[in-house]
Amino acid sequence: MVLHDYQVSYAGDCDSEVQSCYIGCDDEEEADACESTYYYSIITRQADYLYDLCGRDVYSCDAAFECQPDDPSCTIDYCDATSSEDECTNDITS
Image (cartoon, rainbow, N blue to C red; front, side, top):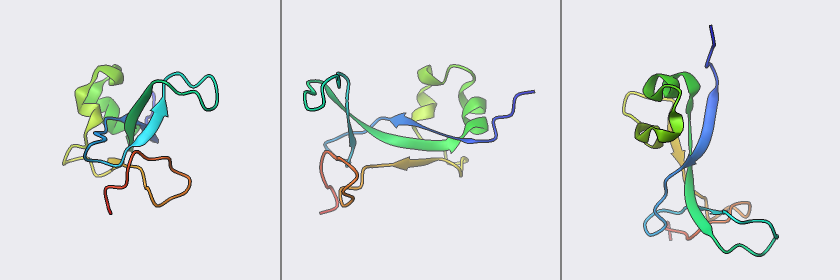
């Protein structure tokens, strides 16, 4: 029996027009030479719930990228533009 009694975090969708998204780089081979950026949020939830929801194919499961009302362990975190540690697209709170 395999136990999935742990939290998992992974990148989720983020609309940079209306949300404060984290910024990622697809081609980050050189420190300051990013030519292909993408925007994301961070989804965290219990692994057993995610496995029950999607089975083994989590990456192709649309339901994995949103929190269901009956999943109290699920959170979606957006970039905190007030934190000097986070590089965000914008600060939608101001």
